[in-house]
Length: 260
Ligand SMILES: NC(=O)c1ccc[n+]([C@@H]2O[C@H](COP(=O)([O-])OP(=O)(O)OC[C@H]3O[C@@H](n4cnc5c(N)ncnc54)[C@H](OP(=O)(O)O)[C@@H]3O)[C@@H](O)[C@H]2O)c1
Image (cartoon, rainbow, N blue to C red; front, top):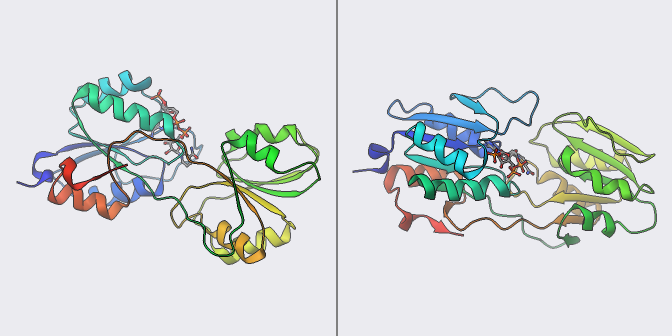
């Protein structure tokens, strides 16, 4: 018997391209009832191919309650690698409700020749790593992660975010653009050149959709301040959407998934 014969009701924790692709593919399987959960942070989320619920569950207990009430058979954590709170909640809730859990854990980007990365623990350390002398900085972070940079008002900041930044940085020189990936290397190189950027600050998101800024920085010889990934719970996991399909189709057992 395949896992998909036993698994009928699936909840995907999303907010990523992987979650969307997974939902898209699973929407075509009539034997499955799939719901996608979004945190509700984005003002105009893309339309989704399966029913969507929005907003927090109220911690691990709230999520466990939802899993029980909705008779979910499989919880898929397809959230962003820096969304550590919801991933911890997913692990705990699956345990509490006795529901199978599979995580899609996007592998991090690795340095290649020509990369000049400065690895830091968080945004506060990233702000300090920019140094005392004024620099032109590309901040490729979420709009809720900008505050620490206000303590370093000597720099110029170029901020790119999906939604407009509603509380602009309290600094004299900043410019804001809204855009949703995927981005291309030529496009990001042109952006960095146009704004005479000297240093890039980013998370190590992994995946192809936003790698362009890393490739562009390398090409231009710019340093990249890279925020270290948070620790995530060790649960059955796969690296890609394709591996998740294979997991669903062929086994659904922990033995086939890599622990991380
Ligand atoms: N962090 C990033 O850099 C980043 C980048 C791109 C996309 N995203 C996406 O944006 C969302 C929020 O990210 P975050 O870093 O703020 O998360 P987080 O810090 O891990 O989560 C904070 C709280 O938001 C709620 N939440 C998060 N994701 C949810 C989901 N998919 N469905 C329902 N509730 C959710 C949960 O509230 P309750 O405890 O009340 O359940 C969670 O405790 C995530 O879905 C993530 O995939 C994040």
